[in-house]
Length: 285
Image (cartoon, rainbow, N blue to C red):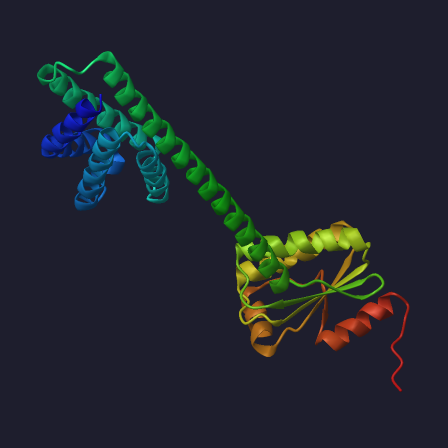
């Protein structure tokens, strides 16, 4: 039996060029992943696969062949191949190996069904090892990507919270200092976080400080008004402070009506107004 396997090993090596050409052709025709793959690398991998198979048959040592299948499955997962791509490649490799084996049987009268079963078992173990390795690696990558997405989401949430800090100044009083440009997305976040904070802390007064907002246009002004009205609907009074000369001029030119809002010159003035509404005074010593 050993002589038969040695002869089959030599026969596989003699048909290697044909197998390589057929494997590459079928892979490119049937698989988008392999069609887009670097052809030199593809041929090199296929050549190694044939060599490792031939060595496993000739030596009857399956371990290197199975280890190679596991490494190849992991590599294909890392390279972004799909399971369909991998199955196509495996099935083509298996089919071509059997074509070569059938040609060998026609020339080798000593080859029996026992030899065929050993070759079949070897190919089956290769398939199982490669698919298992591919699936495990793919699952690990999926978990890594999920963890990275969760970390990114947490980081974005932290950034949003830092960019829109809501500070409890005194019992019933919140301060919302706004810094930087405000677009529709951030405005929605500001409103959501502010309303949540008001409801959680049962606040009566909110001081919105726009000293750090560089530009006020119609959209930003409307966002501020909508936020203020929403806060008023759940029982909080809004004091707007930090309107500089340029922003004041812009608001007048835009015709924005801030009549429903209490306006203070700066944060200090806003705090004084807030305490006055609560019936408290700030005593300077």
